[in-house]
Length: 130
Image (tube, one colour):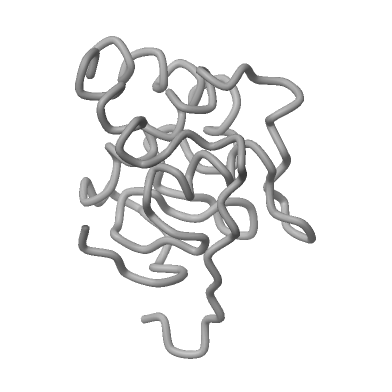
């Protein structure tokens, strides 16, 4: 239930590649990108978002439902990972990860949508269907 939950789509970073370029890069090497993104996620994201992307109460939202706080497009995910979220627990990884690693993490997070991991946190944000 998203009643009363405020959502916003963060402005897309000028450093974020265009959506079509992100998708083409992903399609060209989907399996490799997925595995590399999974490794970035395990090392940098799982402590707050759970090993399977199910989210952790008070730390990070569930990525396995179809809800997003800051937009569900690859470019939105890239921007959120790179710049973080001011005033929230989400750090800016842009100073610690290469652009390619951020892109891989965004691909992996997007791949989790709709997997509905057991024990997932409730929907936060806006449901997306694209």
